[in-house]
Length: 258
Length: 295
Image (cartoon, rainbow over the protein chains, first blue to last red):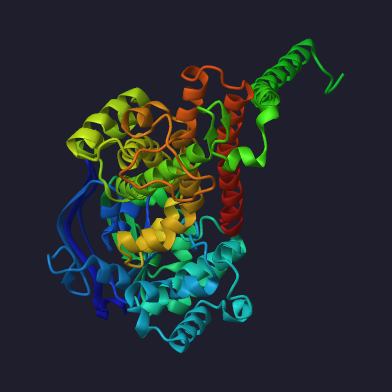
């Protein structure tokens, strides 16, 4: 079934260096639209680096050199006419530690809108509507509708993480990147975020980096295994876990290293 | 015999107690000089201390009277110098912390800032004399003196502002970048609101330095005496010279024979007192701004 889906991200021979250290080596991968794709692999294998390539936020972290091609929805994001602002608007990111801003829940959700619109274009009713829609979509509206003035940083961790996802939605992203979104959460919180991912799937393409193989197995449609900056294996999740073709993959998912 | 002290444990505990008392003792001993200085000054100054000492002008060849012209002069110098160094310093620090990449040019700037902070004030004074009094033709004036003080306080303001900016968690910046905010939007929305208390504290602490330094203003715009009306709030033009508390204290102590003994001490109390008032304001302001931010 997944073969008929359009590609969302396609990279060709993507290489990336931090200074002299090569973090990504000839990465060629196609991530399909509307699916949840997980990136797994031991620490330092380049999962997060690859994820950060997809909205070019790598470039904010210091010296990186990139060669090769990354197409998102058909557009090479290294083309000179690509605006990083518009790119990052369409490709949102969720982090390991929930990072709501130290402002109210309401302002957190509309933060992106405020960043991207003229002040006069933002009517109170538009903002209110955006907040209700986004919080409903992540399942926070009923809990928080009477506490929209509360600081984002004062919520429980699970709620904070959902708020961080809600913050992306008013910008109508096509792609949501998640960098170990559950590693600061407990079992309940992890389940809640995974359920939320299932809810968002289809409307958004989701790429999730995870250290938790059980989570990759439960929550993703396709799975990419990386090692030392290279993609070792990429297939449908159940195949990768049941019949890994590469011995390194088999060793990793059996827990022999990582 | 389980869980009982062995001789080794007892010795460790003795060392632990000793270490704690040494650290505490050193901390507590810092209070002693402050108390002694303030106590000594106030005791000596007592006969002259009164409200009228603040607003009176010096009388009888500066042997008596008050410190009004010097107090106003110091306020002029401090306010003007910070009006220059605070915006320049804060904006430079924002550039260095938020925009600058780690390349040779910015490393040189960093090095310059650090070294500028270590330049003795008498050297700043000579620089101010050459640059502002002569080269820029501001003459011996409040402008020259203020700019000299500004140059002196600038590197410290840059350093303290950078520290305040660096204390804003990177996760806040990441949150902004990843919804497509520009650096300036990030600075405006997140970085400055969350570091403003630290920035202000750093600036206000420079008030005491600017108020206390004598050499830079002595070379560039402070005078021994200037006739000013009692209680006049705007006695000086910017191109004129002015009196200043630190300079006045130096003059009274060394240049004027037969001054009543309590007058220089009272001047010192006024200088110290005004600095303490400003610093206390800074602490209260910082507390207030901190209580409003939480993460």
